[in-house]
Length: 112
Length: 115
Image (cartoon, rainbow over all chains, first blue to last red; front, top):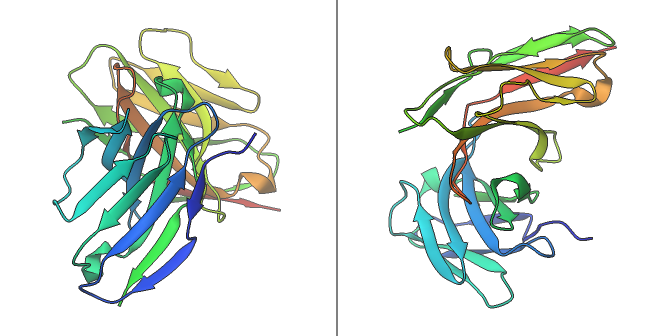
């Protein structure tokens, strides 16, 4: 049973560019959440998608946007990258219950 | 807004000994969930143990147990018979009662198990 898959694992971008990160949820899960984890910090909630709609959003600017596809996979897009966007981006999936959060191994984004 | 505080940035323990990681939280909700996650160098966040606030009995999962003090808003993790594979970052997290509420994490405690 595949867990949560994220791609790519590492990414280097230049300030001002745009980036797209991808997440495939665990089989049977329909909800996808994205978290940003800066170095030495705990993960911070970005947003959550359910039934292809953004259901909740954390305190992140509009430069951060996302999408969920009919197969429940999700993308996180970040526009106009800033140096401060450098972080590990974690995707977590669940099936309508707090008990089932499964995390991926993350995408390490470096903005130079 | 809910907050989670982990006051121990780093801890170390000898193999086979017991260690306790501390966590306090702040919320005005009555029903909620608390979690401990482990993040090894592989970066994947792994659920160690969870506690429902309405349950008075402390959760236990093999060598891992919690001391949940609701009135004090305290949620500590005890690791018994520590193993080298327990070396990792440990995060305490809070979630509201809803069906798929977001997780609010603490800053983490880096645990090192020494041989």
